[in-house]
Length: 364
Ligand code: UD1
Image 1: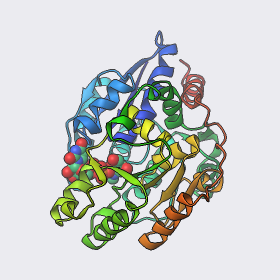
Image 2 (image 1 turned 60 degrees about the vertical axis):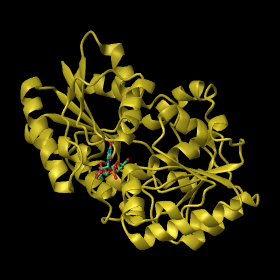
Image 3 (image 1 turned 180 degrees about the horizontal axis):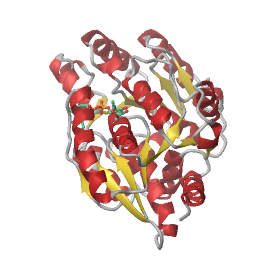
């Protein structure tokens, strides 16, 4: 029996690594194939994660690369269809909400191959986000929907999805985080940037709504410059953000005491996050990782598809307003920390639960 799992972009790798590991228990009856669409292709956005997460070299690499949404999604579908016809798996597993997720789910479904969606049910209720469209469409055609947090159960119920297909299993991204924490102790990343524990801010920003317009990006640079008076800042820059900072002539306007780095590998990034005073971000996954680690997180977005990080965790949603974001950061630095708890089932065993459920559903 063949199961084929898709990865495409950076946040997919940490969700698939624990699933691949958990499937090894069934390797006498299941061959697990991994297909990398190549949506992300830079070494620091892709290869380094495979090494650090101990993922095998993918069985297939589609080499799709960048492009408009239609180009990227279309190219993935054309190449993935050829692969499915060749391998004929019983199940395709897709994770998260990137273009590779919907492209491969849709291709599989049209060939009558069952689809499992890991991280189902999350909703920001903002259909201007490409990820929200990907999430809704993928969930609507999936046969097995694996949910990370309680809000997912409510959202899927409200959308009329048959509850027999929905399984509350916890969070595979946290499975990877828990296993990597053994290694983060050994890095010397703080020394490299002359940072002291609990005394610096990390920034990550890559959403189109924050980085694609000159006005927004100028506002962000001004905010960071003003915060850099209070704390050292480290800002690993996503390729989309770097391209726009360069294009708008903003790179040289960033204060010298802000460390601008290329994207950072998983072990060093989690090490930096774990030891930081706070993170300012617009990422989805980082809201969850900071909640698990108990690190203060200020999210520069108007909505989150991960409400448990706000209701239970250490995340604060400040909207798109840079002034409000600055005030929230200064508030945290001033000692007003949010105390959080870890959501249910974020315990390192989500992938094992998924593989057990699939074993009984598919009879392997
Ligand atoms: C994608 C996902 C987003 C996820 C993010 C994580 C979609 C719609 N978006 O956004 O949900 O949070 O990944 O990073 O799937 N580029 C490189 N090297 C790379 C990859 C990209 O230089 O390895 C550049 C390209 O110029 C590209 C741009 O970055 O045009 C954006 O890449 P793309 O995959 O289109 O979207 P992301 O912004 O990374």
